[in-house]
Image 1: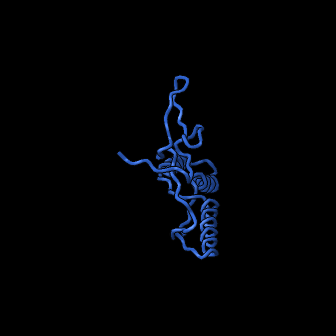
Image 2: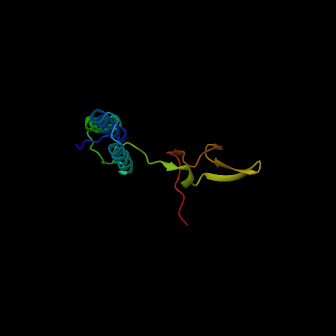
Image 3: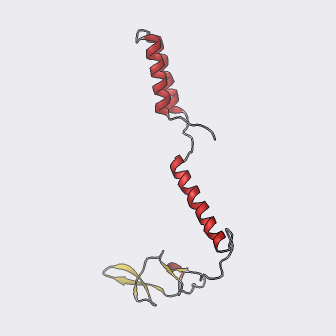
Length: 129
């Protein structure tokens, strides 16, 4: 795995080496240090994920795959004992009503207000027109 260093850490190392080497007496070196710090700031950032987040995602993936193996299934395999769900926005029961000057989306089946990203296994997918 490639190692990465933060910009601030690189600038700190440069400043410390400059301080030890020159004892703040050399103006030319101070100007070079400032230029180097500016150049470090211009280096594009690496697109990386924090190690903790990567490890957490890997653990969750591995745990899910292990749980699938325990029930005799593999990743991506169709499950026999699940029902497909329909998002409310795609359901024939999802209706729009005007209410107090605004719009309100209601499920005819449950007779309650729903969000378009809600879902259930009772819904019937609306035909695309």
